Length: 336
Image (cartoon, rainbow, N blue to C red; front, side):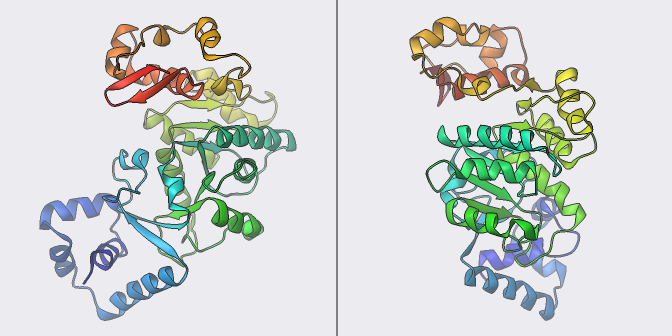
């Protein structure tokens, strides 16, 4: 029995997710011993084998969390998926990712803003992550796909990676398949259910270096995604909206509480590109930037130097890196 079949037999067993799997592995020592303890019947084993056959027939790859192609940001999340399935260009998983999320019922203006922002990220060699829902998610994927290249966007799905949902996004699904990647931890062929969307939101946040939230009401799934990002100490940027529009209540509340940074344009991340780096260094007044030189400085040291916590300086570091003022090396950050 190969490693993939062993892992999927365990993970497809009812009641076993990443946390339970890790607990069982600690208890029994290896996958073979876990499977022996589960007393799986032949019908179940054949079902999992058929899933694997279906995946291979549709050019779907399974990636273990020990694989070099497994997204590094997701790997750092507690109880991350043990195995993910990927359809499309696996190289997209290796790029620095930015999550862009929002309501399914977005305004035309909101979708245009998000689409332009996503295109700008993609043109600066960042992969845009979203959930392929209608509205804001779709606008983010479409904007990223306007940029050249075939690793511009990743759609995280709540069902099987081969299951197109919503059906209205069938053409978008195939465009992402051709020029990006679709990923899921759910069984191939599985239809999404309500509980899986929450888990999907968790991985959207986990995959990304930072998160941008557009229009979203207070109880939306996008706000759940933003909460996951905040819990993971990821920088969150919020696009403001009119106070009387409930679709703006989510991002406006995050800005008011200080949990998100105001996002008014792509200049929040990339600055004025007409200026050269020297001039940008002269005009960008930032306490963190002042402490970075040619010798790598770690996040913890920087936080100590500016008398802040590491989560408090994360947003500054991400923006400075996006603007090309600093770069990350082994051991910390240096001036670019």
